[in-house]
Amino acid sequence: MFGTLKTLISGSSARAEERVRDVYAIELIGQKIREATDNLKAAKMALASLIQRQRNEARQIDLLDARGADLLSRAKEALDAGRDDLAQQAAQAVADLENELSVRRETDARLETRVLQLRQSVETAHRRIIDLKQGALCARAIRKEQGIQRRVNQHLGGDSPFEEAEALISRVMGEDDPFEQGEILRDIDAGLEHTNIAGRMADAGFGAHAKATASHVLDRLKAE
Image (cartoon, rainbow, N blue to C red):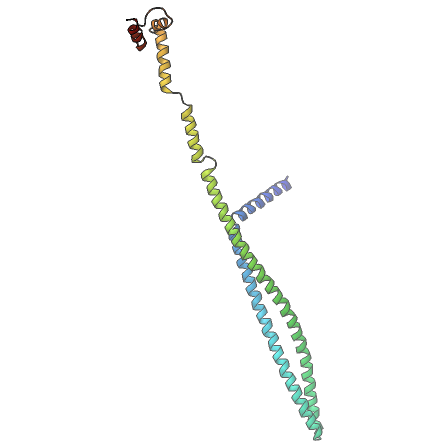
């Protein structure tokens, strides 16, 4: 029982979260783009730092190469002059420089590889952000169109003024004609009071009409 309730609560929470995400989708898209842009900015800073370190290593390698070449030249001159003691010291210094150069070259190679990898990541992220911004523009346009369509549906669909007017027209057209109803009521009253019995009998040929009519006047003129 507890497990079922937990599942229902979790499902309800998930649906509520989805509804919130749908309502605030445009705002969430903008927030995620800002977060991605901040991450890209941090990656660019890291890339710049790596490039700076690599350039510094390259400068140090060039300096060590120059110092080594200079010491080798001086050691050779010392040997030629019979100063083996100075030549030995220069040779040791050159050996130390070469060891340092080996470490710095390894560091430079490692930094170069890392710079290439991070540069590719930055370029990929930059392109994705451009795509996200374009997608956000499309999403905002679609959401705006959806809002316009909903407003149109509210005004034109459902209980719209059009349908209300049509319903009122149908109601008016369906109402009983008061004039016709009055004539019918008079006929009913006359029938109940027998006031029209003479007229109906006259119409049937029994006796004359109580009132003169145009047809009576014409008949009389013809008879004269």
